[in-house]
Every structure is written in C-alpha cells, then in structure tokens.
Image (cartoon, rainbow, N blue to C red):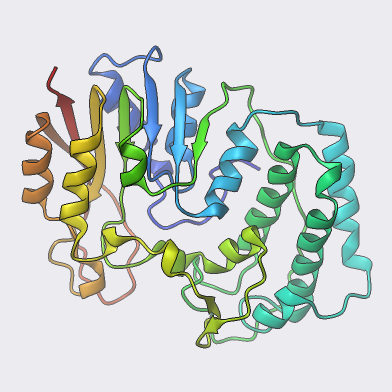
Amino acid sequence: MKINNRRYIGCKTKLLDFIYDSVVELGYDSNNIFADIFAGTGVVGYKFATEGYKVILNDTLYSNIVAYYAWLGSGELRNEFLRDEINKINSFSSLPLTNNYFSNAYGDKYFSVEDARLIGYIRDYIEDNKNNYTEREYYYLIASLLYCTDKIANTVGHFESFLSQVPKTKGIKLSMLEIDDLQPADIYNKDANELSKHLKADIVYFAPPYNARQYVNFYHVLENLARWNKPNDFEGNSMKFKRNSLKSDYCRSKAPILFEDLINNLQCKLIVVSYNNTYKAGSISSVNTISNDQLISTLRKKGKVTVKSIDYKCFNAGKSELDGHKELLYICEVNK
C-alpha cells in the first residue's frame, strides 16, 4: 500500500509532476529544504523526498500526521514483526465480536455493524499493545487501518455523510505499507500560520483550503479513529464529534487576512501556492475564500510572481457549475 492509496479531496497526486517541474525549472534542486505546511495526504512532500530533498510536513489533522510518521518518519520498522502482527490482526475477523465504541457510533451508517465491530476491535488492540511497538510501528499499523477503513466506507469518498443504502459487510484486511528508504521528514501538527513564524526552509509549498468546506467534516470518522479519545458528544445523524479546534479559518471570510499574515512571516527563497479558479461556482460553499487578485497582490509584496495553470477535474458537490476548471500554481521568487 502506497501513501497515495486513499481517497482525499484536493489530493495532488495527479499534479505532482506539474508542481515538481515548476520548482526544478527555477533551479531549486535537492540541496534545498522543501516544506509543505498544509500537507494533506503528504503526497507532494513524499514526491520531493523521493527526489532527494529534505522535507518538512505539517497538517492540523492527526489522521494525516499518522501517515507522515508511517511513510516518512524516523525510527525502526521490523518488517517481519509487522507482517506477523498484520497477519494476526487479520485473523480477528473469525472472532465472535460484540459491539464496541466504533460500532455503536458508526455501525449501520458508514459501515456495516460487523465491519464496524472489527475496525473498533483492531483499533483497541493496537492501542492496548502500544508498548510492544516502536513509535513508528504504532503509526504504521494505525495508518494501515485508516487506509483500509476508508476503502470500505459506505460513502461517496468522504465522511460528510453516508449513503442512504444499508451498508454491506465487506470485511477489512490490513496491508503492509510500501516504505522507501528516504531521508526522514520533520513532522509538525500545528496551525500553519503559527509554524510560519519559526519555519526554516528554502521552498515553502502549500495548498490551503480553497473554499468554505471544512476538511475535518470530510474526514471526521478517520480523525476519530486515529485519535481514539472516544468522544461521545456527536452532532446530528452524521455523527461528527465536536471539532471546533480542528476547523480552519481559511474556510471563512478572514482567509485573505490569514494568507497575508502567513506570507509576511515566511522566511524562504521560493513560495509556491496551489489554488483553483472556482470564483464563480454555483454553490456558495464552492466559491474561493481568497480571490485571484488578493493572492497575487499579497505575493507581489514578497517578490516576483508567476502564475501557471493546468486543466483539472475537481471535487463537485453537485450544485456547482465548474466547466473550465483549472488548478493554479502561484510561484513567488522571494526578494533577496
């Protein structure tokens, strides 16, 4: 299983060459430190790591941080031990399981009751046996569970809501992760604006939320499974836990102010910002929270700005007219 083998809105897997080539053609080779401060799935940072760059990754969602530690963390991974452990975990499907926290919350909604019982049982097992694992092995097993859980969910690819049909039992089997021998990343679970005040990198890339849709709403089930604090104060039929601290102000009207603050704080040579052109989307939740003019004017205060674009099919909730959609890359060569 690879780091990009998951469903994630805004994932840049299909744009990796576009982003990487745009950096390299300006002369920024692997002698430079690359940071992605809204890293999401981590695939952009992973691409640069495979090209020999020292990488810094940051995100506010712990479920994403788990993946960074699994694929790009430091510390020991005992492959044969992990293979045996995953085989043992996969044998749990034959046990006569009863309801648990996860099945009570999400059974007959996002998963069948049987699948939800097994997911909850596996997560409890990993937590109960945490002392038997190295720190990275702990993250490795949770990452495998998260990715496999996502694949069988009764959703359209995210957890904003579940499908009306009764979920079928699909079974869940953890997989070994494909881990490359790469330089470990520096990993942060911080607010990007706070991190920008102390960040030391040559290239800073980021793709902030483009519109009003909160990422924690899309991935609250996986976030809850990763954190495993077992909250019971859920909201509505979609079973979202209280998550105000995980909501991004980049999804609100103050986004332009935050963007300017972040750019002002960055001390680097090159700034690369991914955004899109849904300024006239039919749905208010799809409209960009930062305008093209605001992006360009803020970046120009920092240095020379170039804007590149590529045709790209984006996520559509069904109410937006998104013909001619493009992914944009705002590149700022910072004044020396």
